[in-house]
Amino acid sequence: MSNPAIAHEDFHKFREFFYRKTGILFEDNKRYFVDKRLIERMEATGNENFRSYFTMLRFQTSNEELQALTNAMTVNETYFFRESYQFDCLVNSMLDEVVDRKKAGDPVRIWSLPCSTGEEPYSIVLYLLEHWAKLDRFDVEIFASDIDTEVLKSAARGIFTPRSVQHVPPALLKKYFTKLASGNYKIDPDLAASIDFSRVNLLDPLDTRQFREIDVVFCRNLLIYFDDTSRRSAAEIFYNAMSPGGFICLGHSESMSRISDLFKVRKFKDAIVYQKPL
Image (cartoon, rainbow, N blue to C red; front, side, top):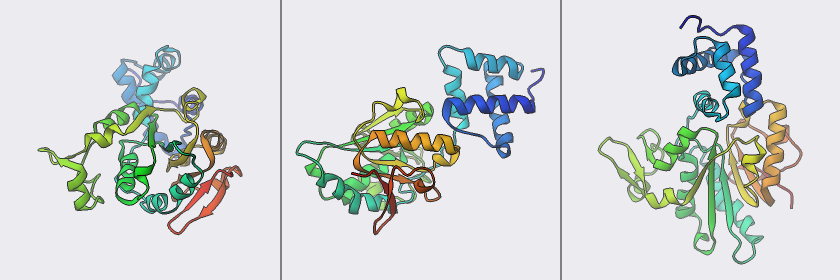
């Protein structure tokens, strides 16, 4: 490869393009990370310089390379029962309010985004099974979405490392998982089949219009990668996708109050969450 280095102006050109496509804005302090991933993709696709790679990226009709690059650029670090106080709040408070407003036969809809390799939506399922007494009385639909197609494949397979399941109590590990010869753990296939996994770019209306009447959203540690404009857009998308009175859970360092006034703060015993007004 004759010139793999990424020039300063090329970095800014790419940053603007990627931001328009995904809503993710890379600051200058992410320069090394971005350059490294770009050079890896340039080498993988046989492009000798940034200009030829960027041309392919913009004009490839299949968007196959854009997806491959997005997979490389997104960080997926998660584990079961992460920030479990929000799952406690789900089964102790939020769902009871949700079902009080339901008519007979209405489903309860929960959306996990970004779902990464599946630990979050599977944690939701385990909490419902173990801690929500009303589960047998309602049809619960669980949607799990991510922009990264590779992590979605991994999530659907339902195989996890010991580190990923380190916070799962031994009794639940024995009840819902099978230990494999590799030392990894495979979740009960019935639980995997209960989740609807889908590739979604949160800021693409074509991707999100299918989500309506959502009662609880888990969107944790995604908005920290967005700028203010993208965060406001995301808030509006969630607002339109949610049922009146629905709840949204963000990461511990995120605050909807600093993003949008569409939601009100709800302080429950277990957690602070945000609610779409009735």
